[in-house]
Amino acid sequence: MNISHQAIYVRKSLAPAYDLQYRLSADVDWVIRAAKQARSITNTRLLVAKYLVGGLSKKRHRESLRERYAILSKHYGAVPNLINHGVIALRYLRHRILHGKPKD
Image: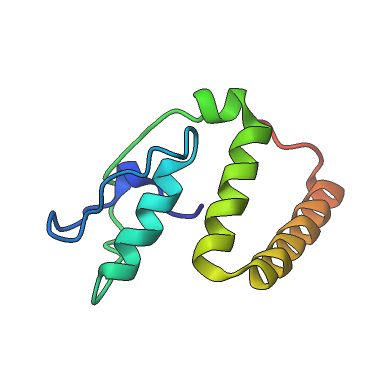
């Protein structure tokens, strides 16, 4: 996910409740649903949040990825999601070849 829920402002009237069926990736679903409700989205290019990488979704990474895949399929469709994940996998493979293993 390119947008961290810690770093966005959402008008209260547009902010949906978290869908607690997702134990590790409810924030991904929340951000997508909020963005779909918005008439416009503005990138301020300001640093508004600093946070540590990690947590439960990092510790249970495989389960988190499965949830994210299900969420993205729900919002964008299974075929586009599969194609996008293929593109992401190819970019990751290219990055690994050029730069080695990531640090985090």
